[in-house]
Amino acid sequence: MNNVNRKILVPQYMQKFKCIGSACEDTCCAGWRVTIDEKTYKHYKNTNESEIKDLLREKVKRNRSNANEQNYAKILLDKQGSCPFLTGDKLCKIQQKLGFEALSITCAVYPRLTREVNGVMERSATLSCPEIARLVLLNPEPMEFDEIEENVPDIFRIEKKIDTYALSVSNKPERYFWELRIFTIQLLQNRKFKLWERLVILGLFYQKLQIAIDENKVKEIPELIAKYINMINSDVFENMLNDIPAQINIQMKLLKELTDIRVIKGVSSKRYMESLGEFLVGIKYTKEATVEEVGERYKEAYSNYYEPYMREKEYILENYLVNYVFKNTFPLSGEKNLFDNYVMLIIHYALIKMHLIGISGFQKENFNTDHIIKLVQSLAKTFEHNNSFLKQLFDLLKGNEFVTMAHMAILIKN
Image 1: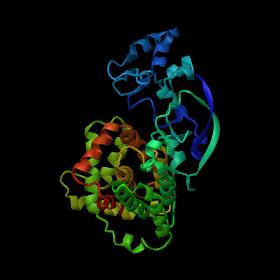
Image 2: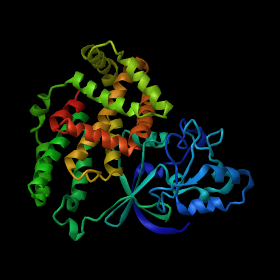
Image 3: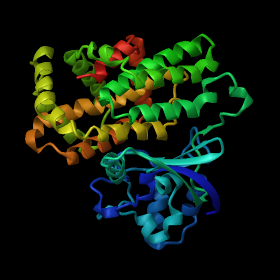
Image 4: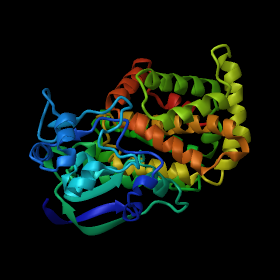
């Protein structure tokens, strides 16, 4: 393993993170596919560690299709979807016997994510790790970022690179990535507005931005950003935001349908299924109940339990959104259409909010941050790590013409 001295941009929580091992309430060694890189696979084939040699050869198998240096082999999970090298106290038998350097790239870097922007490495983490979820979500101060210098092991592969100075992006929105990122994060952290108001303003901005891009007016992006900053600093949005109706029944029905699609595909996370069960019981969701009846109970759970508790804790979901923006290099986070990437941001936020409203109805006065951490972590593990589902979800929304600001406002406001 080679180390290279590099500058890294990180959210401050990354410097506090340390795996808590067997004390963790979940495990990263179950519930998803574990890929093995070529170098690690060959090391396993040649090991002389007698206690796990046979298990390695039996449970680590070559990929025979779409294989590459990184996705060279896989670990065959047991019937419960767990890694066969997971010990009874939720530790890794490979690491215990062969050391940290014997871990595959996938196992060694989780939950960290690495990107590179203009030659500067960026490291963040996924909230599917409970300890990361706590560090990210429970800090009441706005998330801050530091540039540090570190010896970086070569196992930290860079998953995405952005070069805003490249000639190929001179007339593309990538040229203004940093301006868009800074504007987005500053707006999300602007506590002059309620969180749902910030998200609506952000959507209106990206709607205008997409129109400018479609009309080949990319170079007007700085001017558009400046215009919205001036509007935010004035009272331009106040009346418009108040006029947006809350359409609870449509919100709950649409989000529940999206959740059903994921559950039908199969969910291995017991923690998520427990949270989903609390959501359904909390709003008394049954096959016999009408949408109006369930919507009314959803509204009651929001008014009686969720809103009173979250009123002083909006920073929790603010932190979620800022981390999402940073780790996904938003707005260059997947789709070529930047407004589409805003839509995916809102879908993630709205799914979390919907579940938590139902869970608050179940827990009532006992609703607290433990329930929030459990839901966000297990939801990230179930939804965010399944790219095929996310694409199916987006295609469904687009096919039904739901990828509009009007529909996003429905999902945002309660």
